[in-house]
Image (tube, rainbow, N blue to C red; front, side, top):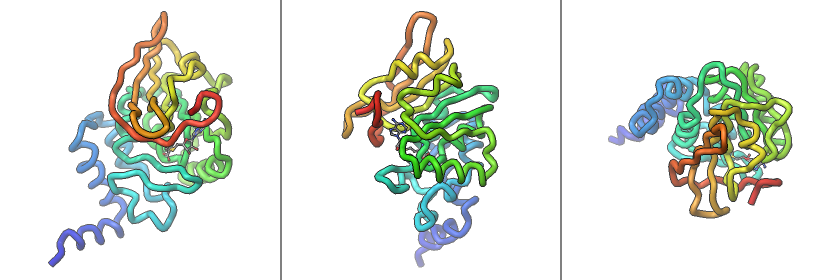
Length: 224
Ligand code: SAM
């Protein structure tokens, strides 16, 4: 008998169980060890952020299509990014690339206020509606070019970019407070991308390369 198949079927019908299996098997079993990050990933209902026909795949170890040639990132990559942002509960953060709104919801579980910018209007609109419906009152979704940041609400304690740019945009570094962290994929449109963390210091930035990744391209003024 196919016990694996039975387990998968059961998980599909039980999103809470599937989500905890994701946290244990894909996150804690790798290098996600921040208890606040693990708790946030165990809380946000990822299956409500994917197209309904893909809900049964929401807790698999991969990105999924969300329309308009865009994706909801792999759970591990979301967890890795937010862990690398070293968030405190009182932090105000900016995300570039709202997509489905999933990562914004994870950020909203971890810090005080989230601003998230999406350049594709229908995605911004549906993410905003979804986040409001799910009760994420501390998230503001903005339609626009996130490469320019959000000067009117800067400075931020941390910034995450969910699309790969050719370099770290100066406009975003300028909107970090001293000590603030920016985590983003940098590299060519296809292949050779790395997640990097830039920490703003009194006299510049300290940049570390963290992990090889594959993201959709950043568009707009600071894009590919
Ligand atoms: N964080 C998202 C989630 O949890 O579903 C996944 C984001 S998806 C990998 C990248 C998103 O960045 C896409 O929705 C894309 O439209 C958006 N994007 C690309 N360039 C952008 C820009 N310059 N400004 C704002 N959004 C941008």
